[in-house]
Image (cartoon, rainbow, N blue to C red; front, side, top):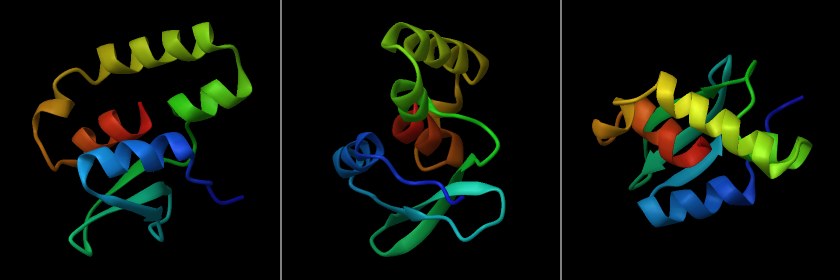
Length: 92
C-alpha cells in the first residue's frame, strides 16, 4: 500500500516553502520539490515516522520514538536541502 502523506507533513512542508508528493522512487515515501524541481526523496517505506506513530499509538510513545530518531540522526538537519534535513523536518 502506498504511503499517504499526512497533514502534519503537508503543514511542515508549507512552513519550509516546499511541496511534497508521493515518491515514485522504489523504497521511498515522499518526494520533496522546491520551485517545481525535485530536491530529495525521503523516508524509507519499511519504517514508521512521527505522524504514523501518532496515528497508531499514544503521543508519549510517538514522542519517545521521535526523540530516539533525533539522537540517531543528530547533525543531519544542519545541511539545509539534504535528504536528512527534509526527513528531520517533514517526518520527525
